[in-house]
Image 1 (cartoon, rainbow, N blue to C red):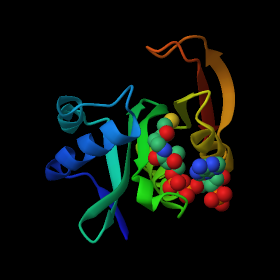
Image 2 (cartoon, rainbow, N blue to C red; image 1 turned 90 degrees about the horizontal axis):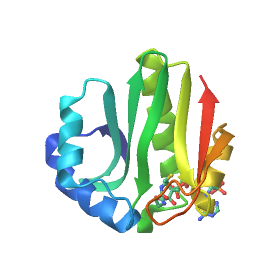
Image 3 (cartoon, helix red, strand yellow; image 1 turned 60 degrees about the horizontal axis):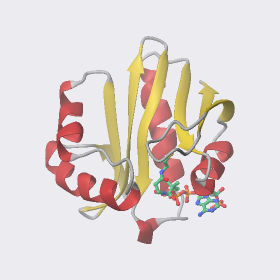
Length: 144
Ligand SMILES: CC(C)(COP(=O)(O)OP(=O)(O)OC[C@H]1O[C@@H](n2cnc3c(N)ncnc32)[C@H](O)[C@@H]1OP(=O)(O)O)[C@@H](O)C(=O)NCCC(=O)NCCS
């Protein structure tokens, strides 16, 4: 398995994984394709012999960065892939000058919350009824 940057031809499979992993707030094909127009965006994926095991993206704005998405295909979970992608996104953000990385997570998403805590993110504040279905969001951050 190798970590590498997204290529345009990966977008179709990533959009399918988005629908599987985020039934309520998936990025669609157009949103993913548009990320290639954004110099501040870095997309990284885990390639298992041509199969996309997981992926994520980060956007940097001056000295802060936002993790836009991170997901691992169901059959590849709990193998450290999510953590490896997260670390690679943080490293990419640092390389582009970010000093602090933010992300948003549904308060019910215990797997993601554990992943982020394990990798040094801390809760900074909550946003009440942030998601379209009314769920609250926790904003987390890490200094880099
Ligand atoms: C969250 C997600 C990306 C984690 O990916 P992963 O490859 O399974 O994560 P890792 O194997 O690197 O796990 C690292 C740590 O995260 C925590 N973790 C991951 N999945 C967990 C689960 N189901 N339950 C509890 N803790 C979990 C554990 O602390 C784990 O360390 P451990 O295996 O040593 O106990 C994956 O579950 C996923 O794609 N979920 C659906 C999409 C999603 O919710 N993305 C995040 C949006 S904010």
